[in-house]
Image (cartoon, rainbow, N blue to C red; front, side, top):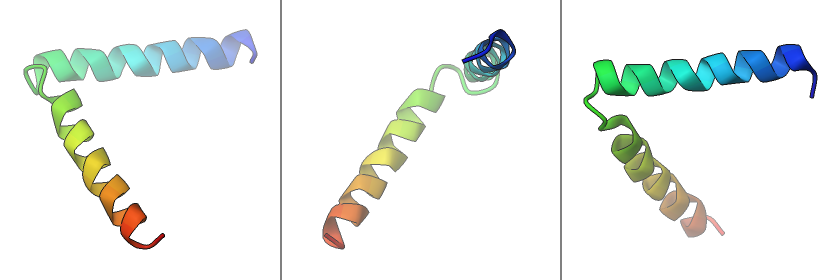
Length: 47
């Protein structure tokens, strides 16, 4: 991984964390976790 890619990823992750704090009140990770569980159950159904 080059330094440029690492910096872009760090800025992206920092932006997502800042948006979670400022806009969603730390509830974004809970929302994404619930959606990931639904997706996992859906994929297991088709297995």
